[in-house]
Length: 554
Image (cartoon, rainbow, N blue to C red; front, top):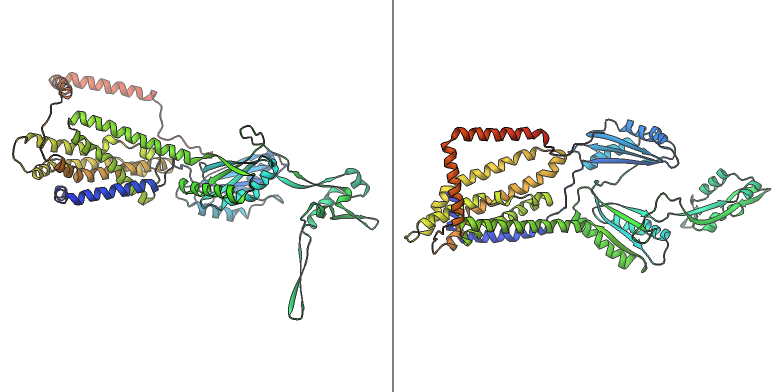
């Protein structure tokens, strides 16, 4: 059946060439459109519960926040590991789930249980954005020659951050640096004492007088009029007019016992960028499972929109980290390695085959096999990365092609000066080696099957590499059985005259002499091989290495 496949290709040479052209075009388009990442995401599904309780020590956070959350989350379906970190004013509980767990299912079950956790009054836990540890894809600073860090921070929190969160694939935009604006009431201790006003009384009055109230409605004729009380604070003057008590029947207002100003919240850190010690930064996290290229295109488009249509003219967003640079570097590295590898393979083929045309036919299998692999990878949605593409072994890909080409070349060289039908000679030469080539490729593919059984980070790291290599080998086998005989029928019409490769003949002569000596002294050869093997086993305990770094269970 394999030989009939070769004969069909020789009879339909034009069809084979057209299919090769289609594979080339489709493969190039697939490589341009397929998702490319610098490295695969190895993290398992995780849910992180973050709880803030300002002003409390780590011991109180652990006892009153982290521990109740851990107790309630114990036994969540498909959870593998749970750990927590308790710091001053902050609790962080991280739950890792099994690899097959859906991210949204994990978040849903955690959210359902979170409502049952008994926490101190005023403490509200929240879930971290659905992003992986390697999800940081974009960082930027907001700069202005005239505005203060507080103004820039306000723009970041109320304009820029909300704009970036609207981009598909963005999980979160976290702002750092600057100061958070606050409306502050600075009380005068002497005045509060003289009016007999306590601080809790002022806080209660401020909270109670900052809201609108509904009052129902009344009808007049055929119209309804809705009644409501407007008490929402909009200016600092409104805060100063709030009544906090009375003195002999005279209302005491906030402005009578203190000053209302616009200030900033206490700082917990500071961000500096280049020569500016107080800058405002934004960090964009990618949604788990999204493709870096697509997300970055939307983020870059939104940056242009913000800079030229939304932000004030003096405020600009300047990105200083963009993962697309790393993706481009990965693509350039892979392309460079592929070109260098194909060039070296071509040089070696020319040396051994002593025929430029035969070497070119064999070397053409490499890019065509890769393009064939790109088509299948793109069709299955498998992202390409530096490991999956960079680990392709060009020598293994062209093994069968070399055997096919060398046998066709030898058969034609033996008939130099004779009358023969070119197609029949090529078909006969292909028939001699097509079955061994098929089974040799099948054996190599079988060697990659254990990789598909890997799970966890090992599977995410090596399965894309195995798929890329398997598809490339499959493409190489198809082109070996079809394109190589067809190109040979075109390029070797005038016959082949074998040229003696003197360096290769010399190497082969030396090897033949050493092989004869080994065959004449079998006992010595076996003893030497056994000693070498035993010596290598003695070195095994001193060689360190691991297939994957160990995973911590704490």
